[in-house]
Image 1 (tube, rainbow, N blue to C red):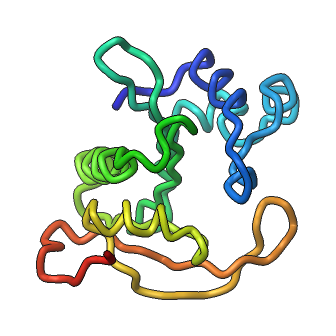
Image 2 (cartoon, helix red, strand yellow):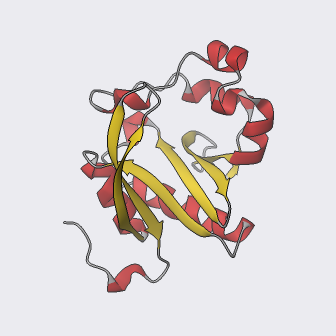
Length: 162
């Protein structure tokens, strides 16, 4: 993984997920920059956002490493055409490894909507386990039921979702 650049951010804003995953679509890049939303804020982008690229240096995904007092919370996004192809677990493992290398003493976790079984399976395969379930406010102003999943490097002792 490498630091997110503005060109990566602009490409991510062009990604279009099919329903029901369309809730993960970002606003237009110009709006993100103007309003300094998430990686539209150059300081936040530099401090928290990373990208994954393939051998041809094509963008395949991104990770946000959000610091929370002893915890690094991951936010992950995989390019839409790669979703459902077994790539999500590799992105999650790469992001967790990066987070551990940057803050070795931190717990690594993420939140995932409970209906997103595709992502949950990918995260479990990467070594994350569900530790809590709760409702929280989503970006669109709705409330959603989420799992908190914690990265457990020795995950082989936990049952995996089929």
